[in-house]
Image (cartoon, one colour):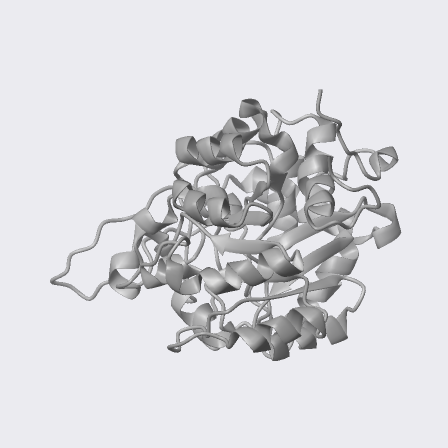
Length: 382
């Protein structure tokens, strides 16, 4: 039987934010265009105002009081969490608006009309997540990380990530990729080598080839994955979800088919020692995701973005499929954190309140699996 790793299991399950499980948790904003331009990293959402299905008032009250209660804890009171997917934004941006996670549906659009850049149904909701005030985003998110005892892998260009590292040196694991945001071209290979060998960067990502309509196994980028394998640096690749229901409107090069997890097979065959993080867990292609996990033991997934972008019933069904198929030790927590500082706590609560997960499985997803994948634990993996 495979040996299980349970770091800090003596701390017990994390404190719960009392959000009852319900059929309606979704939505990953179409921030793709704006965030990718601002941070140099792909992220599929847009900063225009977004609204999700109305939550029952009683849930809103429970959430508010649960968050306030948790805020009274110090980080020593809270079991550790690793968020493997945070973006190095400097600010929330001028177009940032309150956001309702959990859109109940994605709406159709008419090409003969002015089409909104996101497809979430526009309904009022309670509660909303609010963007940080101008100039306060980094400070607010780091305060949340301290309150929730979160260590985060922060992705972006080296200068942007360094701001986060300087602000929270003990809580930021730096990550950077080879794409130049929306600009043409790639980061020179030697520059990337220097960043990993001498600059303290630990993860290669976020790699968003899907936004370019490219397969992750495209030979034109193979040298970068060869470098990751050579330096024993894990690579994090965006696979699956994107565009918040309007990729055709805001991202003309984006191809849903290029997010198929099985497109990673040739890449992994060429680089058999590469450790790979499939961002967004290849949603919604669960069968192909499970096929890849079954075929390659070096592949992990994160649930970032997905976890707050789609109806909760759908999110839970997807995560449950991963766990019930036997891959509970390769599912990692992530938010795709951007714009809204409380997004991290909200996302953590989804795992904490998943009634199909045992306390041990919750700790694995929130901490242990990422610690193993990132080699933060002292034991070498089997």
